[in-house]
Image (cartoon, helix red, strand yellow):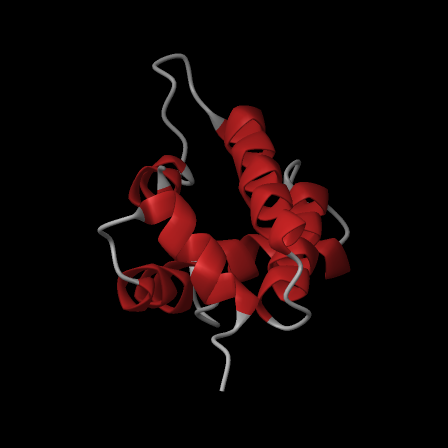
Length: 107
């Protein structure tokens, strides 16, 4: 049985870091129901949405395309949209709540 494409992409770009580590980061930081991303994403249903909510929605869609459909470009779209969310939320020192997640996923 062939490995899913997303495991091959992760291995190509992360080398010595295992797919299990990356998947753990995704499940504990990105896909967690009470985590930062889903909480901020839920603001789309509120009268005042967060500035980065649209980027987070796109990031989730790209991640879906990567994990479920096996499209390698989904991984890069996910990282791009998460970086855009970071840019919208960063303070004068360059910190945002998304920076620790991006740091863990850094290539």
